[in-house]
Length: 264
Ligand code: T3D
Image (cartoon, rainbow, N blue to C red; front, side, top):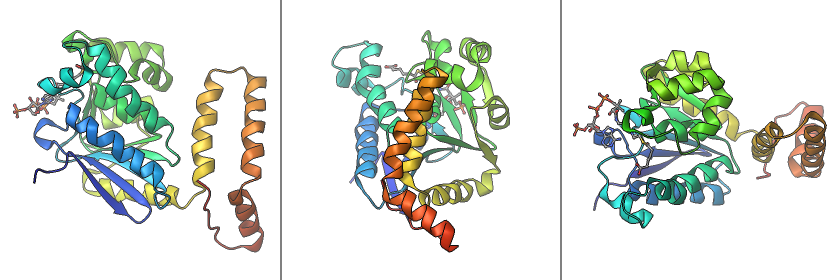
């Protein structure tokens, strides 16, 4: 039997999805997409999963689109139509990540290039091993940032830095990526996965529904004016206020005990 292209493991309530094409730095093929999206769907549907970590096997996180993958064009239905690949494979993946009912952490263990960097940035929190790097590799092969990169990058680093990174395709170290706002925290390589799992476990014990709605509210607010954002917050807060987790959180605080959150 061949190795899975996505290794799925559980660490308590944390589901870890490991891209598993280490010899190609976990570059995306149609076959990898065909395992990764269902793996996210399965995590979304499983009530025992309260946080997801996306990482890579070996020395890379993900080198973006596999430039050798003949199956990719076939899966897109049209030869050489890169746009179709984005629409049919990367867009559903990115949207699934951005609408997960639980927090998603990108544990960037090594190089994240091209669409690999975009998918990392689509996650809620990006952690990086000190030896990891980020490369907007697209310009070097005559493309623009995709898989959400044009939307995500300027929101994280600002317009000028986004354009400079995308035009030059220069490699950004983990520490520089943190300074620019792409990465939340950097950990020494030897401690990296344990540190990522520790944060994921902490988030898994928190009120999942409120965390997912926090992501949604912030994404919605970006396109709104101040007054509309406050009204949107009121609407979401009304729903959360009627949920179990708010009652439990407040009761646990007043009783000076640890809360047990279950909403999802
Ligand atoms: O249809 C579409 O095209 C959709 C478009 C999607 C958007 C994109 O993602 S476009 C961007 C695609 N990605 C790239 O252009 C990155 C290409 N890779 C690199 O520039 C370098 O590999 C890295 C900077 C990421 C890492 O460099 P380094 O020196 O650490 O490793 P390496 O030796 O270059 O790579 C190791 C192996 O992985 C090597 O294979 P080999 O020679 O040992 O058999 C290399 O060919 C392979 N590899 C790395 N990236 C890719 C890849 N093979 C296929 N596709 C890759 N993207």
